[in-house]
Image (cartoon, rainbow, N blue to C red; front, side, top):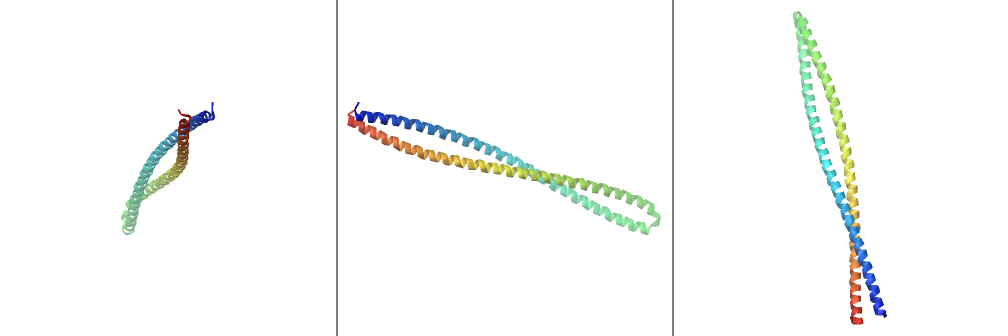
Length: 192
């Protein structure tokens, strides 16, 4: 076997090795692409979860708003009852004969005010608990946003790695082209 045939055989082996290397790079790119797809699906699911949490926060905000209105109405009612008690007190002062009946009415109004005050306390506790729940949901959304950011950064790094591998495949393709040209020239030289 002369030197030209030996060189052609070596070039053939080199092309075979480059072909295997390109095949391995293609598998690597495929695996990275599949990983990006899974990360994208995970981001999509996290986005849906954030949407649901946002809806829940909106509903809780509406509930707090309604409770605030209810507290306002109760405050107005207490104020009206207090004003009524003041008028009744004036009437007791002026009408000594009706003191007993008016005192009984004042007792009932005082009891009603007490019940309303107790209800306001319970509403205040409920608003506090809802506010705490909104805070927890906000913290959870923040954690999910941070997780999405990290996943996005990871996708960026994988994309950059694919880009570099693509450049490497391009260089290998050029090298294979040059080897093909070289094999062609050797073939011409050998006279095949």
